[in-house]
Structures are given as C-alpha cells and as structure tokens.
Length: 219
Image 1 (cartoon, rainbow, N blue to C red):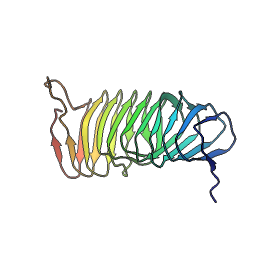
Image 2: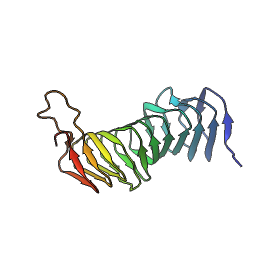
Image 3: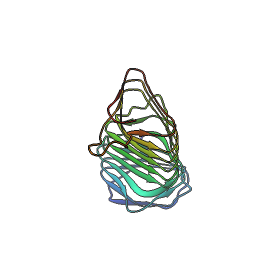
C-alpha cells in the first residue's frame, strides 16, 4: 500500500517532524522552507519541477524523483545527509557543505559544492555533467555512466565510468585520475589563443581507458 501523502499544491514548507516524510505531488512543487532537523528522511516524488524559493537546511536524507520535470535546488543550500536525485530532466544543485550522493540520474547535471562531492551509489548523466567543488570530487562507483564532463576542483578529482567518456575540461589543484571501461576522448573546445590552455590540468594526471584514448585538446 502506498502511504505517501498525495498533494496538488504549488508550495510547501517542512518545519519539523519526527520519523520520515513521504510525499507524492502531482505536478510542480516549490519548497519555501526546510529547516526541519527531526525528520530522518524526506522522500518526494512529483510529476513536474522541484524548486525552492531560497536556501534550504536539512540534516536528514533527501530523496527526490521527478517523472517529467527538473530538479532545481541551486540556492546554496546546506544538506548534510545523503541525496538521491532522479529525473529525465536537468538537475541543478548548490550545497555549502559536502554533496553526498546516494544516487543520481539526470540529463544535464550541475553540482556546486562548498566542500567535497562524493557518492556511495551510481551517478548517471546522459548529457553534460558540470561539477564544481571547493574540495575534492570522488565519484568512483563502477556503475557510473557519464557522457560528457566539465569539472573544476580545489582538491583531487577521481572519476570512474562504465562506458565511454568525453572530457570537455578538468581543472584541478590536486591529482586527477579518470578511469573508463570504454573510450576516453579529451575534447578540444578552445578556438582562440589556446597555446597555454590545458583541457585536463592537475598535479598528477592519470587517464585509464579499457579501449582507447583520443586527445583532441591539450593536456
């Protein structure tokens, strides 16, 4: 029996609860407030877009699945629990602390973290993954499936992909280790004054492909 609360509203506030919250919204939903620290988990399924009117604070686990919309949580939030975000649309997430992914799937995905970006489950991105971390980025599940990546990091970068991977840019201040079961392509997106611009930059750079490596841009 589905015990989710069925809603058809425009906005919602989460102000405090014990246990867990299960919500099924028919269409779009905007979160106006999320300051609850008592709920162990908030689990939202919805038909359209999930957005917020401001930054959100939450210490529990957040699960979001959109059937036909986007997940737009880009207000420099403070999520400290694990995040599971799934949609066929796009995902925009900004977090002041570490982004801890339990699972993620989307088309174009933009993640901005004031600290690290980590995962315990698979990350699947059919379009472009744009990842910015003020710390390190460690996404090494063997079930990851990226398409194209564009990354900046103030620490180390480690990415594992079970398929082919196109690197548009990786700019890291630490080490870079990329492993893909299929071909790796380092793309050349620079069109002017490209002599000193590296598509992949780090202290030590390791690119490991199970098939082939093609470098179109400068390393």
